[in-house]
Image 1 (cartoon, rainbow, N blue to C red):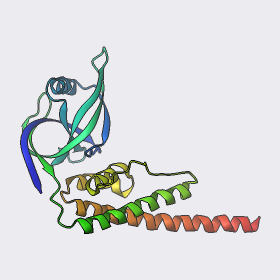
Image 2 (cartoon, rainbow, N blue to C red; image 1 turned 90 degrees about the horizontal axis):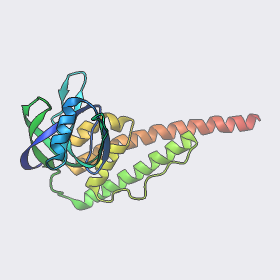
Image 3 (cartoon, one colour; image 1 turned 60 degrees about the vertical axis):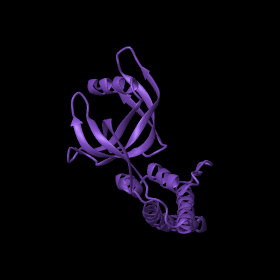
Image 4 (spheres, one colour; image 1 turned 45 degrees about the vertical axis):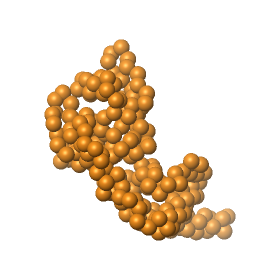
Length: 220
């Protein structure tokens, strides 16, 4: 794992929200402490940390993602709507203060260097096929056109983040784990397992639907 520079970073805990690099996250800021945080952030480098907060344990995760404000609008009543873009991931080293908002000492983290590019590319291709199959089968099951964006990331690391951010179902429940992984191959490998499992389930449901559909046509 590559650990980069250490810095102070304001944190914005969100329940059940995991931000990934290069993903957009719109936010509505209304609590007074986060209004103060927003003002402070806008006066510096427009960056703060989005981190998952567990409402059950009342604790924040160890790893989050830095968000950079790219658009903001503050209304007369002090509420703000902002659009942020995910940047580097970070690990919380120490909570420096908790009032009026959480301020932490963090270290930037990145994925480990690639050891076998050929093997990684092969896995990426398998993941891409599984992803297309899941989207296609979902469309058939729901009788609707489903398609992937034309600009799907080609780089394995970026693709792994895109999948983690956009897929629901079993992938959504593992988002925090996928964010914390610092090995691109391991992240794609886990995503392939989840996609392949989903693909098998969807294929079985689609086959069952076709069977009933054919039976209805025969009876009529």
